[in-house]
Amino acid sequence: MSDVNTRVITAHVPLPLAEQVDELAARLDRSRGWIIRQALAAWIEQEEARNRAETIKPRRAGGREKR
Image (cartoon, rainbow, N blue to C red; front, side, top):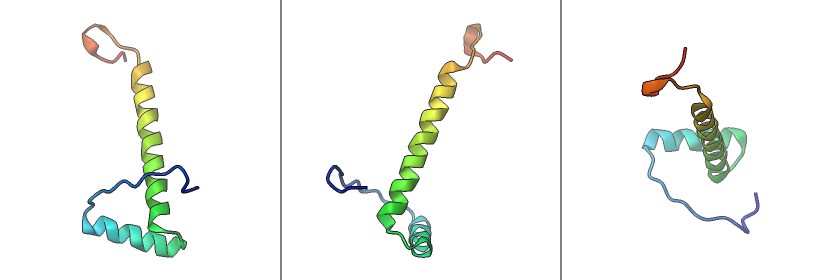
C-alpha cells in the first residue's frame, strides 16, 4: 500500500489486543500498520456484506423476517 494517499487514525485498544497485534506482526514479519490495515479492511468488508444481506432480506408486515 502506498503512503501517498493515507491518513493516520489513532485508536486506543486494550493492552492484550495490542500485544496480539505485535506477536502476529513478528510472526508474519509484517509491520503493525500492515496487520491493522488488513484487519480493518476485512472488518469493513464483513460489515458491508452484512448490511447488504440485511437490506435484501424479505420482510413481513411489522418488520419481522419471513420464514
